[in-house]
Image (tube, rainbow, N blue to C red; front, side):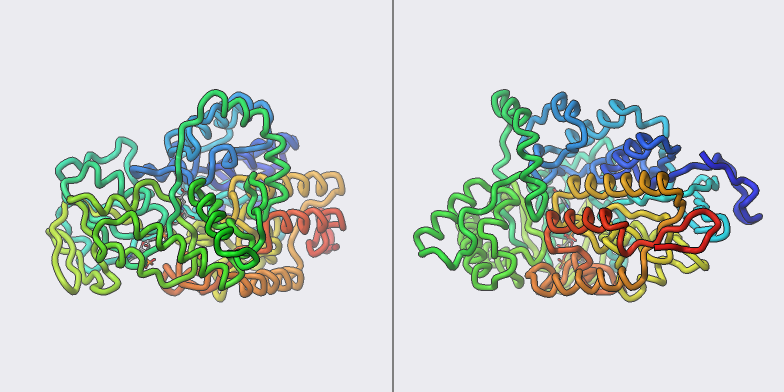
Length: 553
Ligand code: N01
């Protein structure tokens, strides 16, 4: 551990010890990052704003919250012992099960002693002269660190639209990602849900079972595929445990980090109609997020996408009894996959319940929240509870919620004022020794994110080991390499269906946010190869510097 207490300016008196690494967040990324850097013999401290571990799976406790990636894929792969001892109980794990998993990981690897809970990082400022980050927390402490690893998450800064009159509402209002630990008993309540993204579509069927009446305020209808969730029986569990390593190879070869075999045929257009229908029916019967990859070209070929979209729309139509409601749910204005494909359990069937009303707020927008409820341009709805399933300021929200200042005091907010990007999504030039896990420019959440997290943490761990061995204590990215990488990210995105409509994927859900897809869409397998190749070639595009000497590539 390197102490440089005397190096701090008067305005940043160090109130806590110094660390080699400060990690922001104790979700899936922060936990593994802590484990990994400890393994390098570095001192580390994690600051976590919640009072427990799990990140997304700590915060998102709304009814119906569960992962829409299969449990056997949505788990760490770094420890075979962990794989063998943990017993998943369902194909798609619920929030409580995931929270238990991350707590188990924290205990098993003795991580808690280096995590400070209930503590937000408010500011991280790079002290160029001392080559250290000065980190200020919400508890008023200031610590210094050689390196900062942001594990703040791609979907952790909540987006609650400001409706006129919201402060006058006499009932309860809550964002889904702030659902209380004890839950909310909605029995006998008139509940309004605003938002029909992945979250709303998970919460709506559960809330409908309890509420006296549920009003769903839908602005943009979405494609959703049945989850076909099932419990995992003992035989399946044994098979899973036996096959984890084989699955790991499949994940590495997959463009999205999932342990599935590639599609049977590559294009919906290369087979006759009967074969195509049979393949689509099989994929529909299997359900889950893999449906988007029924054919290889669903996300890139407009005609293939159209055929797949029509198939899904016909299937949804069959589920909804009232044809007018069905058409409202199916007035989808974008290709399948242009927004994140949703995985649902009983969502469409929920509209067959007498206590559920679909309100089209695209046709008649919400005008205001009133003391009694909500008013659209066409009518008023008396409510006891308003649920904001309105999503997040994705990708950059959590990073920019902190005041991050790089070399010369430049703010990350200013650097990204016209669009976010970082070299490989890992290091933003001008912000040395700040590593971002699943940052903009990486595949991030356009993948099995926990697998992408592991890949990033491992790359960062190897890079830190390389720096220690080589006597470097500063890494930055070359601005030209970063600009070229960002150009490639945009070029690849332009060829995809992804983001061809407004959504959080394009930043359109946040007023004033620069627009555009910031994920690397070239595939996680390709991305991994690029990262490995760059590391093997003296970390091409990164600039290293030994202590007290000029930068060297
Ligand atoms: O958020 P969203 P989410 N008036 O942004 C509506 C991940 N996730 O929390 O589309 C009326 O997708 C908005 O309408 P519109 C996953 O990556 C994973 O559901 O802007 N409506 C939309 O319907 C997902 O993609 C799991 O027209 C307003 C909704 O709110 C990401 O999180 C589970 C409005 C927001 O949808 C975000 O999903 C859940 C307004 N003023 C989430 N403002 C897993 O299972 C917003 N909306 C792993």
